[in-house]
Length: 297
Image (tube, rainbow, N blue to C red; front, side, top):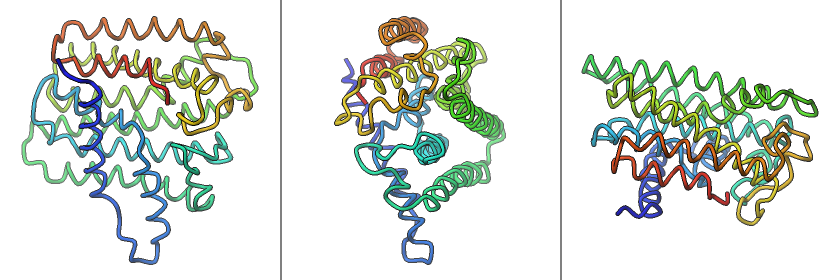
């Protein structure tokens, strides 16, 4: 039986090693900008999104090395979003992963541009991979993945906008769900869909796995909201209670803490059920689903 924690660490090491390849030279005029990019990109993190790309791909094929550029580009975009999230105009956070956020370590302008640099680098990584693809069938899958990548980033930005714009406002349950399906769920869903598309999964499998991804994306956000309310700052590495202070629309503010926990359990169980037909091949994805429910940061 697979040891989930060991496998997770193996995946994280693969992703970190690949990310190191994109660290830019600091012997140049813009060396501080490059340091700022590296500071956030290599700060650690769970690397769940690239890992989801790789492991979903492995449900159907073993040569996951072929899709690493897509996993890496996704992690770059995720880190771009974190840098911008932490800025005073959005979440105004001073710490992430237990260290000062990018704009606190460097300055506001540098952090803004470091996020922009990561955002653009993601598209460079994808376009470089597309440029060298000689196989027509695989090229079609990669172009489809590129298209889905672009649309998911668009949805993430829309979700971030609504999350910021609707502070201090009462909203309906449907709008809360819509915000977080985009803000958090869009990239997690993309992770699963890209892995399946690049592996040549059937449309039926793609639909089932998309449903699974919707569930874990929502679960991830609910857990984030719970940790923001009652997490341990020494473990989460960022302030607790910040969402409440900003009067943000969260699952805790909508359902209450106990209600949010019940909703989390329900959605996690639904996600696990969707993996049943994939048998042992989905063992890591099952572990990852439980990890999302039980994580402390």
